[in-house]
Length: 273
Ligand SMILES: [Zn+2]
Image 1 (cartoon, rainbow, N blue to C red):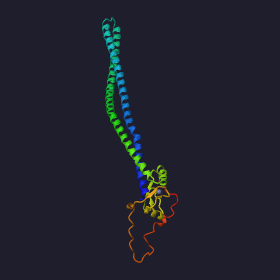
Image 2: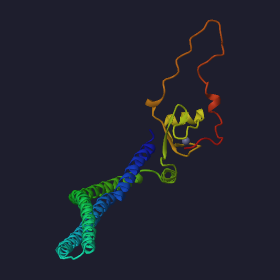
Image 3: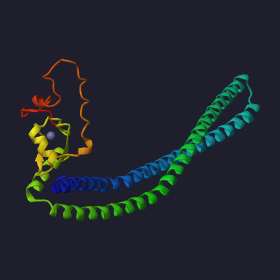
């Protein structure tokens, strides 16, 4: 391969690694933020559950005190009912007692409901506390990991940048300018020429041009996608097997120049990636 092409190829690999590291460094803080968000959500759930448990408990105590006063009322009615003079009055007391007893049953029912609710809030609280503990343990680990990874990446980035500077210093200005224009636009600045095509945009290369690329004597650019073209002889597909020779037939049949027509004049706009 042409030495400048070799350098451009290495430069592209270095630029790709620099991009990868830069992207990674930018996303690393998100890992800590994710854990922090989970931690905050668990904390707020704990507070919510605790406040519900408190409310629930207050309601239960309220119902219990209602029952207590109702029961005092009932025993008072019972005592008073012993002293009544008429059947009417006695019935009125019985009615009051029954009504108070029904109220007691209603409050007992409400207490049961609060107890069931309390159980579920306790359960939620426990799981939120467990989650808080898990995330709390994770956050220091995550922070340490992110810090270490960032340092590693920054160090590697500096090394790659030094390497990039060295490589660029060894490449002539013109191809370097072309590389800097093509890489951001096309994502890759080099393409392998293989089987008479540019492997990036798939446009056929003229035979003369393909031969020049194969000779590696100068830097060639794809007319269609403008990438640098390089050639690797080990990737060339094996030549088509010779056609079986048939007796007395087709003198004009030959194995070369078959693709000549397709390869010529391919300057028409073509598929680009
Ligand atoms: Zn191309």
